[in-house]
Image 1: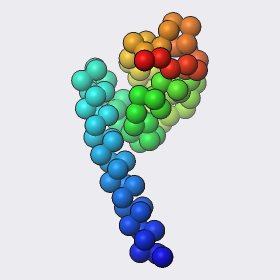
Image 2: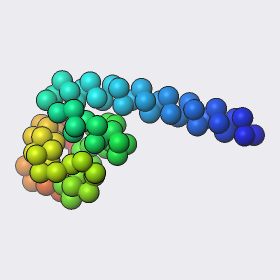
Image 3: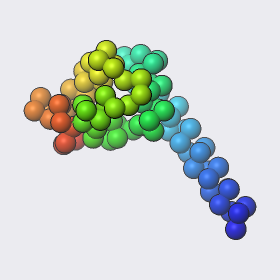
Length: 94
């Protein structure tokens, strides 16, 4: 049983690392700075869905995300969310 659990854990770690590499590239291509990307990935934010569902308050609670990083993220989120939704992160479009 322990061998199977370890294998499953390792498989999950490989999957997360792969997703992180993909999203790091996407976010880099969309103008995110390396510190912003690192902070998001450390917080396991490795998809648009996860990023777009966070409220501004939740973003500020992420270690390494300050006002400058919030502006970067909000500009990106503005492409997907309506103006009323940008500040509360409730609804995802697209």
